[in-house]
Length: 161
Image (cartoon, rainbow, N blue to C red; front, side, top):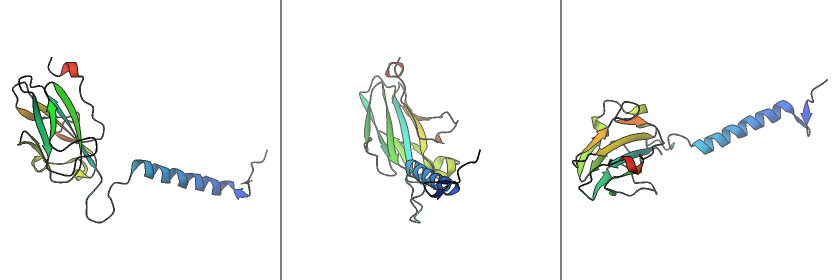
């Protein structure tokens, strides 16, 4: 049995090339490009910070970021209530500092190496202990700042219990 060499007047190999090009274009549009391409070195990457407040005595603590602007779902000077956790998302801009109640807890300059030199989405974890003292946590990648995009807060029942 012979395979058709044309479909609707077009060659099968041409249709395959068109499908491959369209698929690639859709993939790039869905995933975004890395650098914004303007030559400035700025990117559209995101820093996601999980702040967990285990301090039952204080009502809340305020987390802030010195780098880029907060994204729509976050605020600058975000208030994290007692026994809760919040995921804060910011436009990544190097160097940056993450502070709690005005005290710098984590600085990109203090890290020996940033994943992909900061040219990727990054994750950071901050815990405010039961004594009210904030400290950086080591993430799943065994670093204080790691590459990644998805971060989820812990279950509320487990934060202060």
